[in-house]
Image: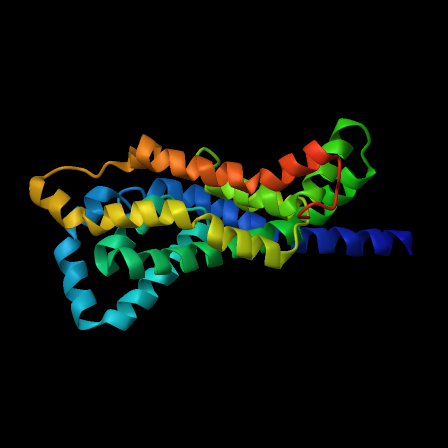
Length: 247
């Protein structure tokens, strides 16, 4: 009976990690096969065809673009930044940012669910049984989930896929992940979408876009201000010694 139970548990564990394996394989394959297709040069060379298709099939263009963006994010494929620029180039800053944020949030949610189903439960149980520093870190994150979720989304230095996986491994509720992702990625998405909206002039000059714009002072300082704001509840708890402040 024990052997049968162990077999079922092993089979169940393998089934849970299949989505993660699929994502890892797709990411590895995509890194080598899609680099030339999901690039600034590819966007520049195909810009006229993309604009013509958008003009004659606007709704289909929007849906196809968002679907492609979801796939890129969900499978951690290269080209997320180019996709964001393309959203601005094809649909303008306002609509483009909306499409980008919705698609990125959807893709992030898919990889979050895959990670939580595959390894999140086991890691969460192991962390719950840990003592000392690991236990303190876990409790600190649990008590300040909203603040930490917004913080890792707002900080430009935190890779997007890392911000998708950490909450899954810490058993963050789905609705908190979705809300914090949707609103947390907005500032950066608007910046890069606006860069994409101006690509027509960049192409005309034969230049490349300034992807480091998010680190320029007039962009970076407001984002860092939002980061500080997201950590304000944590600072208040620390200063007052209360755990119920803005929890």
